[in-house]
Amino acid sequence: MGSRLLGTINVPVGKHLTVGPFNYDTAYMTLVAVAAVLGFGLWAGSKVTSGVPGKPQLIWEGIVGFLGDLAEGALGAQARDVMPWAVAIFTLVLASNWIEVLPGIFHGTDYVPSPSADVNFCYALGITVWVVTNWAGIRSRAKSSGSWARGYGQWLKMFFSPLHAVEHLTRWLTLALRLFGNIFAGTILTALLLALPVYFFPATIGFNAVWWLFEAFVGVVQAFIFSLLTILYWQFNVDTH
Image (cartoon, rainbow, N blue to C red; front, top):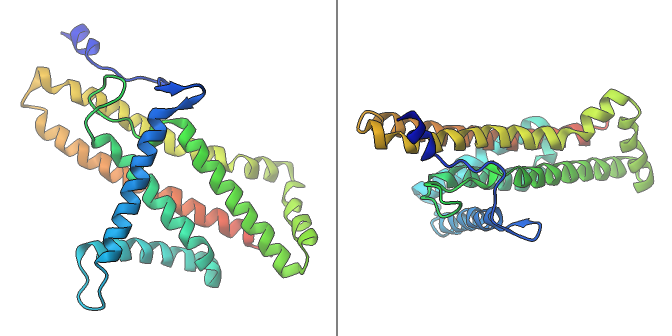
C-alpha cells in the first residue's frame, strides 16, 4: 500500500507550464491573486459608510490600521510613504498563499500551486522590495542633504563595510527564500494529505480540516512577515543618522 500511496502523490518540484522562459501557470495564478485583491478592495470600497461599518470595511480597515500602526512606530511621519507598499504586499502575498485551497487545474495535481511556491515569484517580490526601499533611502538622503548627488553618496557609504554590504545586497534573496521555503513546504504537505483520505477515510477528514486552517494561518503569518520586513527595510534605508 505504501508504494501505491506514493504513486498517487504528484508534487512537481520546479515543474511549470512554460512559454519560452516564462512560467505561465505562475503568471496566470498571480493574475488571479491580483484580481482577488483588487476585487475585494473595490467591494470593500463600495461598502464604506460613515455609520456602522460592514464586515468588508472592518477587514480592510483592520489591515490598514494594523500595518499603519507598525509603520508609524518605525517611521513616524514618513509612514504614509511606505503604507501603500506595505498594504499591497500584504494582500498580494496573502492571496497568493491562499490560492492552493482551489482545486487543481495544473500539472495533474489535486490542488493549485500557490504563486509564492514558485521561487521566481518570490524573487520578483524580493527584488521589488529591495529596489523600492533603496530608492526611498536615496530620496530621503537627497532631501536631507539638499542634493541628489550627496544623497546617493551617503547611500553608498553603507557598502564601505564588507559585512554590511553583503547583508544589504542579500536582503532581497533572504526575503524571497523565507517566503518560498515556508509556502512550498506547505504545498508538499497539502499534496500528501490529499492522497491520504483515499486509504484512511474517514480518520483523516478532521486532520485535513485542521491542516487547512493551519495553512491559512501560516499564509497570514508569512504575508505579515513579508510586509513587516518591507517596513523595516524602508526604515533602515531612510535612517540618515
